[in-house]
Image (cartoon, rainbow, N blue to C red; front, side, top):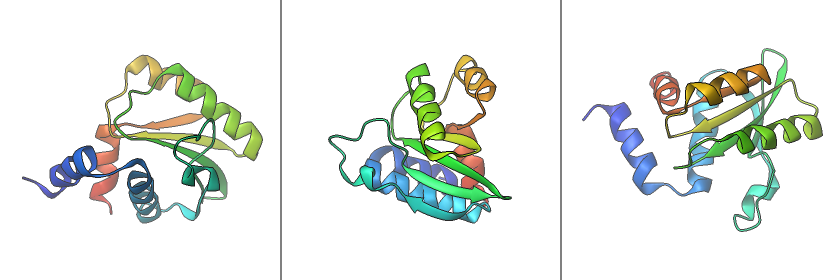
Amino acid sequence: MKNENLDLFIIDNSLDEREFRNYVGKVLYDNGYRDISIDDACLRTEDKIDDNDLKTKKNKKKYTVQTYLNTNIAEKHIEETLEDMKKEKVDKGIIISNMYVTKKIIEIANDNNIMIVDREFLERLMKNS
């Protein structure tokens, strides 16, 4: 089993949401994102509603990052990210999932200045880590 496939197997089957968020933070850092901070709301998993998981910067742009473990990304996730972008006054949003995402969702996200990192894109990022 390739290392990337092993990492995805571990993500899919062994990590909880907090561990996935922390892993994503490391992958983002390894790919040039800096000043990564964790939103305190993430520490309360039961009542986490509409809050970003991470904040980060790259090339002088600020990002809010939502992470979703074993969750299919839907339009409601894009709406939540847009709310966080306004609240945090950031330049761009990123939604990261270990699942595949439909082309329609990617198009809606792109139209709203949100980058989608789906399973395939996450695998490419992990190769750079």
